[in-house]
Image (cartoon, rainbow, N blue to C red; front, side, top):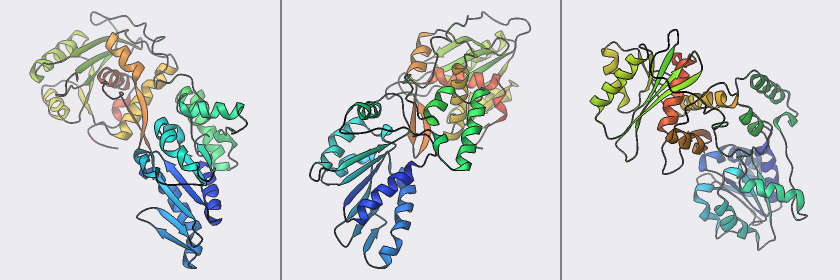
Length: 380
């Protein structure tokens, strides 16, 4: 189902129907905070019955019980083992594509065995994972059924208007076609990685220095003390829309890193620099600013990183930029992930990997396209 289609209302109606018949129902969300909207809905629906003494509500446990033995509870996918001792007539998996495959099959499915219960999985797609396999099984297996509902199928005029606006922005090139297909059209996108067209766009040619009349920008991601973490300088030619140099530094003192940055800055005609401002980045940025270099600090938060990364995604999706076929960068771009954190999208490398080249490239592109006017030296 697409965004704002009404998944929570649908699941709420199903679980409350089971509860009113004194059955046992569970609602499973990717993490605890994702359950807030449903809990508000369930509490309001059951308010009159609670006042009449027919139901009891435990806000701390997010559990509702009935005088006839009915039960409704909200469970978190990041603590999925908490359902193992339960038995249900109905389980609703909300944003099921973001639940773990092992958690669903090993912990959730057995809770339906006693009563021959039903499982309803509702979600916006996330690539072609186990949820996709279940969806396809519903098209072929008589034991289950599958439906798809893009956002524009919602009858609400406000939702239809929002869909039309996003569709228009997508056609104008401001929104990723891949994200639009997945988030709003509820399509299973075959490309499981976050960044599209990485190989197709990796045709840039490294420059040896300034080309007359060209405008350059430099993106800087500072390395930390963790093993494998690197400082990366990424140089972008805003005139030709291509990345022209990647400098990866590990195990070098910050004073020496600044020497390297000054040399690259001078080589490309003193371009503007957009550098990470978090943590150790603040003092380094301020030191360079004190020397007169045109450095702007970028404070990375959940919100600002979303804008930064999706801007790069959109450029790759539209084939508007060329990037260097640098082996480290190619691996990091190809492995990059979009996840959910407290109901918000978050972006980063898979566990055990780094995203230093990705961040430096994104900063350089952001600076080249005018993004330095946003999110600088603080949250917005």
